[in-house]
Length: 549
Image 1 (cartoon, rainbow, N blue to C red):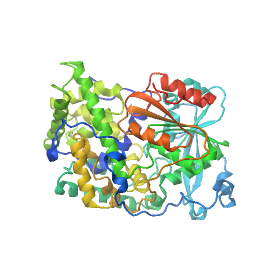
Image 2: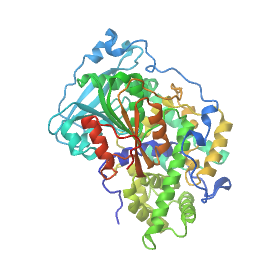
Image 3: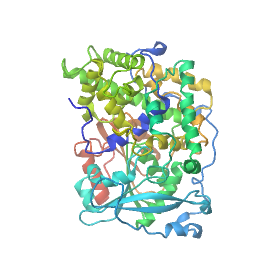
Image 4: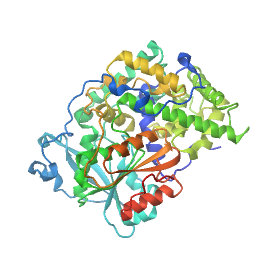
């Protein structure tokens, strides 16, 4: 019996989970089974803004982005020449594990894009050279926010086909405030352990209020660290998209060739909106819809993970007795899963570490992680079976993988903090506590396994020292070259409807559909998606309208 997930061809399965697992790490919620009259027989809600209607509600007040609206084009303005004229001094990588051929360097960008005299930020960058003959640079982002593009470049051959690796220098960067790029540091490892383990029933007033001290502690920790506090106002995605254009110039490219997964699709579409004429060949896999509020985003993920979990349970039951720890039909299995979460909450399950039992919140994080890749479902069945027998170690291992926790108790990177810092700037939530409460109960009814876990999206950002700076709005990128948007029909973290919406918004969007389960498609589809994307990247051939695999 394995205690860890299988090695994925793409490490994205671990990085991409930041988008949802960190949400649980912050809110740390475990509802009782069937709370508020809901039971496991309810199916998943529609995925996306339509399921919440929050776009018409009053949203939190907005601040001002230091990057979204500039009166000049920095690429041609003398005030920014020092940034656009720089060349990267590529050399050996000191703190990156991966390919021996990897080169590393730094890129300097302005702290405040609307005031280049206000200071600088040093970004870590990495390049995996083409194995044959480089036709240019392919800039990549693995998602998050909080995922490391440097690490993605180091493992590029696990993400991309041999043909792409032969023809492109794969270039990654850690966005500002992430990992090696002056990564913000707001919590100790011990704080993160406790935050991830604590659970609250958010459907009760006392439980919802009980999460506030942790949320406040995260915000205060960022403010108390001088380096982090300086960066907080400047970590919105528009600022990172401006940084991306400096990287394009430093790589010697007239246009940006780009591949973004998950959150990386939002970074890519933001870039396309700012610089449509500089879009080269752009692939956005696991699309984020720019029109979503924070609550729409959470509701969409709640529905996505609900449906993915039901698909997982259906597949489990088909394996038969001895292979599946659940019995009955899908509804009964869903209730049994909820009962396991509740049991782990009331009486945490023992693990190999007596100081770290499996709590309800950690059990939820583990099962959530499993939904990202259906190749891990066998291990999910084993872990759940062991937990039902009273052993929480396998699920604890999986939960720790989802949060990038190492065996020595340290955490790799700073994704658990960066995701909050970026999202609180990028996406406003509901202004009314009453509407938040009503939405929480609606989500619990629509999505009984996951709804309450994704509720109260605005609570964290209500304590955040910076206001959101972006109003939800479509991105059209008029004048851009064709942009390939990939959606997976069973994607839990970025529901397929989001890909449909983004492709429709973009004037040159081309939707490519993967009929499958799990988060994102390239590298997981068995060849069909890869062939069409490679033809686009290498030859400029866009997928046919309505193409599906």
